[in-house]
Amino acid sequence: MGNLETPINLTVMFLDCGRKPEYPEETHAARGEHANFTPQGLNPGPSCCEADVLTTIPPCERQRRFVILSQYHISPVPGPSAAVKGLFSLTVRQVAFSTSLLASGSGYTGPFNTDTNLIFRHVFENIGNAYNPHTGLFTAPVRGVYHFEFYIHGSGGSSQLSSAALVKNGQKICSAYENQTSSGHSASNGVTLLLEVGDVVFVRLLANSKLYDNSNNHNTFSGHMLFTM
Image (cartoon, one colour):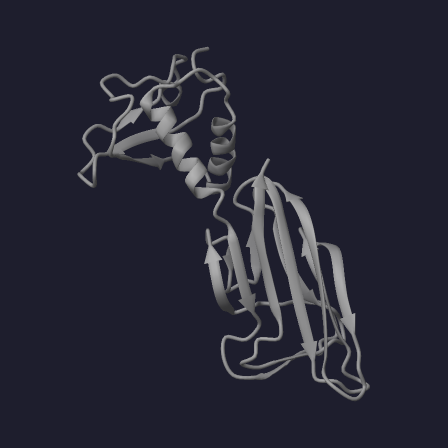
């Protein structure tokens, strides 16, 4: 086939300096045809425009197809493909978040009889919106290598163990553990992971563990994408 070896269902609109879209065009693949992705009448090199990609496929699948699109090593392509690739490079490389356990105030979390997912409600940064402060889940928006760290804190006491684990798709990856009988204590851990689109990472409080937090934000969960794959 022409510039693209696999048909990709995309509808591309060009917005020239914020004006209303003038000509939405469907790809040949979207119409069931097999031809080059070269909508007629488009300027291959506009100096001031933006591309808005509209699709009916789920977001995770859309990101996967953007990865495929960005990895074509071909001769210079017409304007639409170049604009979409540029949009991709500006979005998927901006994924980073940093959170703490309590939205406000102070208090204890746990202990519980079973392992319990933690929801870090205070968000310092959430670039790319891949972290959900309502569920505590980070969902990978694109295939790539990510680094995660978490810190936990307890107030001390013989029966106040503090322990938590970093979990990927239900599998425990690493854990942090501390127990001091006379004073406050902290523990931490971190890991670098290759994630596929839609993989989920979160922190789980282990059974019979107890955390304490206040405005000092002792308990945190952070991560960022290192590079795409």
